[in-house]
Image (cartoon, rainbow, N blue to C red):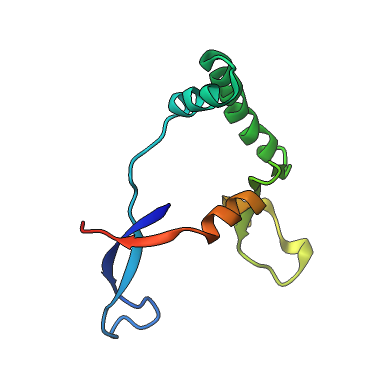
Amino acid sequence: MAIHYVMTQRVNPRDLTAPRKFYAVAKSSGEESVRQLATEISKRNGLSTADVFAVLESFIDLIPERIADGKIVRLGDFGSFNLTISSEGTDKAEDFNSSLIKSNSLNFRPGKLVQKVLNDVEYKKVSE
């Protein structure tokens, strides 16, 4: 497996007057739909594509619900999802209220299986 990348020139956000430097940016090799994944999974385990698709669709609906309930969603060796929030600070805890929360983000932590695959990838420069 190879991760394709392209080069891009960027400014240093800490020093806008510094010379721009080149950085690698991952280049997508396409997309994979839920239906395509369901078809591939069905080929690997003998379940019908429709059954696998239904399970994946339910899974996609369920994960955001659980995260919104404050749960960490652990998917075994694949990894886990959890919510983080960003807020303004206050000098005293009693001065804080929810209006100071600015945003939330979804955090994914890869599990052993995903991390092993990512550790073993190669990188290949491609033209834009």
